Image: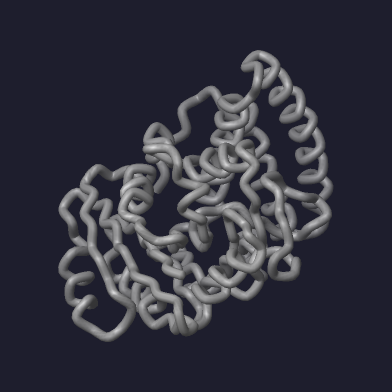
Length: 309
């Protein structure tokens, strides 16, 4: 068994080193091998020196690739093209893998025969958790399912948490990367390219499973915890969901009408819940307000979402 761990990075060379070292320190079982690929998506290749210096230290083999067009889809496509292994794992440059992370992901993929394995992303707050979400639950990607459990594409109200995301996922190269550009560059600046990718995999019958034994930790700076930032992000997430839902609808007009009806009903419901939740305290009210922003974004999916920051 061989795996490639790809870490796309953009203008965060210092933070990248924590992610990189956590992956290079992974210990694999006998007969397994892995290497690490840093895809530097900055225009000036500003991660090169740090990565090349790290490559001289002990750890898993390390490669560096400069992709100077700032576009996360282009960076991820470059990683897929460079993958000569059976498995490709993606880790974000602000995430840190726990010991045993890679072995757990690959073991889950091998034993279940899955095409995609998702793992948990647990937030770290260097400046403290936000007052509007003191437990950090709204910023956590985790579900209470045993390792190897199949998961779907859409949110399941019977489960607590979310699971779809490219950071901390494992992909079977042979069944996930048939297209020349698996991630759409048209979505690489605004976002949504990962959800679009998984929608296409799901439609093609690929199997998704959960791994509860492969968590990573994600550093969330204070600048990304302000209520204004989170509302804007929630609104953009709703827009991207709407755009991709319409894009993949069998009939575009039917898709547009269906989305509008569902989003309108959801907006009425969540707005009412938001008003009611204001009686239960500021934190609960703000969480509901973020949901209102997300649903409103679905109604305004036709506007071009702002580029991600």
